[in-house]
Amino acid sequence: MMDEDKELLGLPVTELIDRADKTRRKFLGDKLELCSIVNAKSGLCGEDCKFCAQSSRHSASRLTYPLKDVNSIVKEAERARGLGAHKFGIVTSGNRLTEREIDEIAKAISAISEKIGITVCASLGALEKEELRKLRSAGLSRYHHNIETSERFYPQVVITHKFSERVNTIRAAKETGLEVCSGGIIGMGETWQDRVDMARLLKELNVDSVPINILVPIKGTPFESVKPISAGEAIKTLSIFRIILKDKIIKIAAGRETVLKDFQGLGFAAGANGMLIGGYLTIKGRSVESDRELIEEIKNLWKE
Image (cartoon, rainbow, N blue to C red; front, top):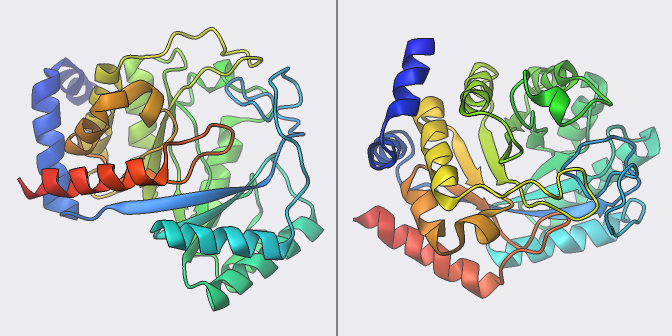
């Protein structure tokens, strides 16, 4: 595998893009997955993830509120469907939820499934199998839990919980019959090998969807002074992930506007076939109109 990694990392960007595009066409055709999320519980997180504005350990300016009520979450799902999203994700801050919070989210999932008709995903931290089964029974389709980076680099990003906890949560979700969405963040100071190792572990875990976030340094977080990576580096990373992961959904998430800028379309020529629309957790995304124009650009690009 090391020789294969070395060969992959040594290829020119143009060749990587070409291989990635051919891989995407072969395994996924013109499938483009659009997701939208709601920040259902914000701030007051006790974890120390160095990139995150929601950690109570950092001085970043953040919006803080408890879990939204069921009706509010259902309305957000209706909005997501109106944007054209295929999937709607309920996201909460913190690594653990209370039993009451999980019950409320289960009610929201059930209501969305019955009234809105959009596929429901959730990102609720580290859950046990029993909790995941409860959510699946309510109608949850996919569970999101990022590994963030490689196991080797992880202690440089988070120390309040272990990398193995994230992997165990992913395995538990798969074992309960849920699809899994798991990826991470690039541009935090990791090496190219860290990125390759992350991709290979995600392949081993057989996750279904891989969001790639590009670090947007946030003032008040430990990573506020990290120099952003170039658009070319991000494109190369997307290509490598596609070549390794072959038939998985690869989403460009946070950072596509600020890092890729005018090269967003190139990201979808480099193997990506999914994106978040309607904004992120603590970072505002582009306008709906701009993303609709991008979607048309992607469709035309894939016809060529």
